[in-house]
Image (cartoon, rainbow, N blue to C red; front, side, top):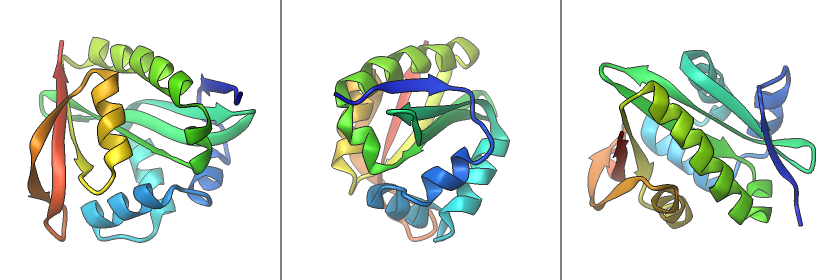
Length: 152
């Protein structure tokens, strides 16, 4: 079984993860921002995050996640490589712990997830987020996204 750990980000993590990003994450970035330069979007997300972590799978960077601040809320996000799918139960267990840390800082967590990424939608539900069943137009192309959130 793959070993999943969470740690503080190090130099080179963003570049390593961006180079092998899951296709669903690439499409979500493009749908939300209109950009195909995932590395630039990831760097910006990391810079804006008030909490930020790297996920390792078997000692290699495989995911980056955190929370950015918006007026009155925290905006949780995660991007990763296909290696994350080798440890789904660990990812869910650790994900719940870190969502709890985010909710300690922000009473309300809120963001949008690409409706085309069914695995992501289901995972957010397992983490305890309320995922809106209906989609709404989101991002530069107005693609269908689900709103998801959690209140302390």
